[in-house]
Length: 100
Length: 207
Image (cartoon, rainbow over all chains, first blue to last red; front, side):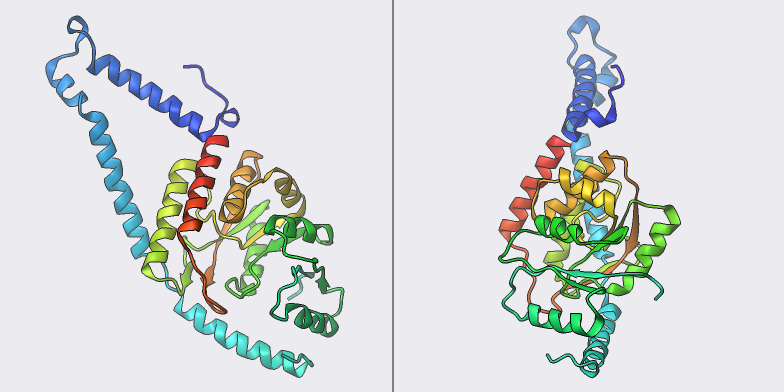
């Protein structure tokens, strides 16, 4: 496949190209007619590969989102500091003549 | 602080007394520091950016939420980061380093992380926080991006970063803390989620 310029291709286009590439490679090997089949062990591994990859990606997604959710920082100090700053700012502004 | 700055306040006739307070601030700090540029009625965020830029005299523009969920204390860090790498854009991120949020329940955090993960997979944007709106832009960069961006809401912030990458602009990141619900409730309902997904898929298919 000739190299296509990044800028000209949408993300959707990149995905379709990639899937077409992998899909046709898989189909050529796994669904080949009897005369051109690769050896049996390879075929047995190849056939369910798309489903395996999908499931693996699903697990990766869950694990990643789960990890990121668990490590999402809770900014307690920032909230407390903000309240303090608001107090100080209100006092300062009142001194300068602001009427709330 | 030694930094030359001005604050441009764009108010679309908020009924909560913003105008009066802003006018008092202008009297206290001077109209060279506080620029009031109100608009007659409620127009969108994108046009607010454009409106504000027309009156900006500096070389860089910091966009931030005015409800104190974004703390100005980060602005010097944005400036430092920009100088460090001569970045065109510095984006505040809640997801890296010691960035984070306060006031979000588990559901909100899960949606946030899930949406961000989906965005990373589909768009590979090269920035960790795409829906954040606390950013520093070079003025010409912001002007260029405003011409190209068409979306609304969260997706607008995402589109800015995606287009910036397309145009070859450099993006630096600074961890920030986002303190939600200082004033008022911040909701994330089904409508926002649906429009986010629609916008994400549109960006996926068109950029």
